[in-house]
Image (cartoon, rainbow, N blue to C red; front, side, top):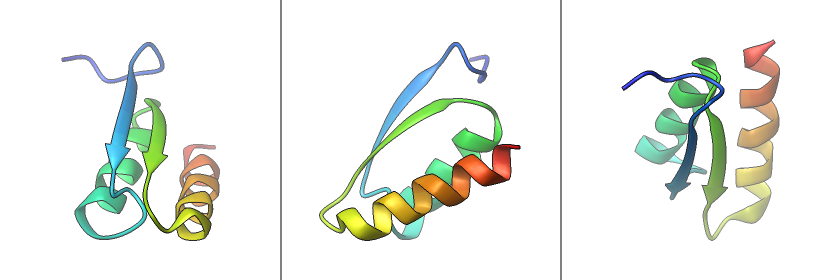
Length: 55
C-alpha cells in the first residue's frame, strides 16, 4: 500500500505505546491520522508533535 497524503487512518489508543508509534510513523509518511484515546490531552499533544515532525 502506498502511504501518502491520499491515505487516511484512524489509530485507537494513539496517545501512548504502540498507538503513538503508529501515529508518528504514519504522519511521517504524510498520512492523515485521526487519534482516538481516552487521554484527550496527550492525544492532542501527540497530534501537534507529529504535525511538526512532518514539516
